Image 1 (cartoon, rainbow, N blue to C red):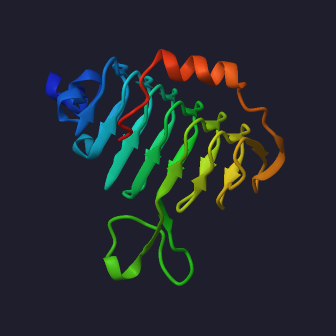
Image 2 (cartoon, helix red, strand yellow):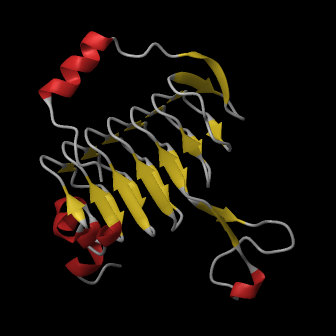
Length: 201
């Protein structure tokens, strides 16, 4: 039985616009939907025009940088206590997860709240270059870097770097299936003359 309104609203200070003033940097026209949650917001930088949708959970860990015009969609998770860097114009699909740590399983227990000498984590930073598209329900494991313009197809598990720019990868384990057609010089020129893309975080 809930005794008071504070129990119902516990954690609301880490949700939506309530975290805006706690962010290390918040750019122009950033939208934080009311039901997104950001833990350790003080370690988070979000650049201009990016959006974080309802029902996302983010633990900024040591550092989280989100570039311009990014979209973090419903039920996405970014966590693990490490460092995550997301370039400009990136898309993180529904229910996808960026994990900067996981348990070490061999010879140890995979459980929280037990003595530290009985458990351990494998940590690794995650980097998404500009124009990366992560489809729905993907898992990006610790230590992964993804090259510019890469598409990761839905339901993929990424355990190693995806190194070929402007390529499409798919599967578990994730493998390249084809090249991606890069935007034409005309479209690229239009994008980069209509808006200032300087001062990356």
